Amino acid sequence: MAIALQELKSHLWNCAEVLRGSAVDRTDWKAYILPLLFFKRICDVWDEETAQAAELFGDVDPVDYPEVHRFVVPEGCHWCDVRATPANVGAALAHAMREIERTNPDTLYRVFGAADWGNREMLGDETLKDLIEGLSEVSLGNTAVSSDILGDAYEYLIGKFADVTKRKKAGEFYTPRSVVRMMVDILDPKEGESIYDPACGTGGMLLGAIEHVQQAGGDARTFFVRIPFTLDTDSTASRSAIPGKAITIGAKRRWSCSFVTE
Image (tube, rainbow, N blue to C red; front, top):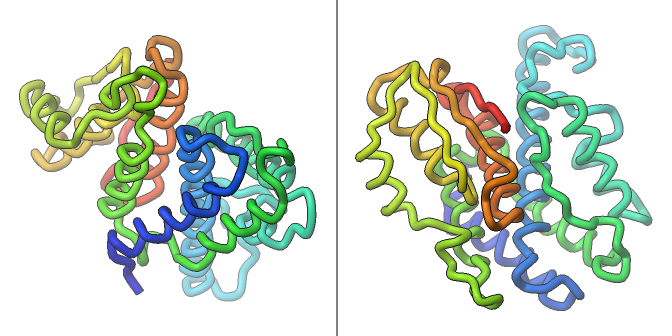
């Protein structure tokens, strides 16, 4: 069953409510909720692809058909494996995320950021289990959540937790979608070209450019998106651009394009 944007937003906000009683600062909530969102998305898409392969080839071992998967989910690193972990959940979560990044270097490099999952003083097992159980209630596979809805939910979180408490303007972290669309329309990127944003923040301009090329009938597979890691003034913002990349690649093949990290 497809999930509505408002329902997904509600689940994400419930995650924020779980963190409200933890030692994690409000301005850092996004650094924990977003990686969990993308971890769940990757695993749910992997499960869908496994089920589709079973329909085609019968009862098969997913290891025998790696080509059916967009991403590699190593053994023992699935969402369900972490969910079943009785203790030291943070360590299990960190291990699963690092292994997924390691086995998908071209598409998921640094996708999960640098949250300190192993800090039990900041995030105990009970809090992490509550977060995991909350997101376990919603399916994030392609049949349940479209790329547009997941992208909107991603932007909702980014905008909701834009850091305005440390003498920063929210615009340093998040640019409203209306402004992004206007800038992309002015640039009018086309297939075969490349786009580079040296202060990409959460990557809204870059992802908007991909959508623009696709909507104009261009082949986004020949469109190169370059993501920097060193020039943005907010390193957390720069890291958040990579999960945005995971949304587009993992959602629908129509979003296929070439990402280059620099």
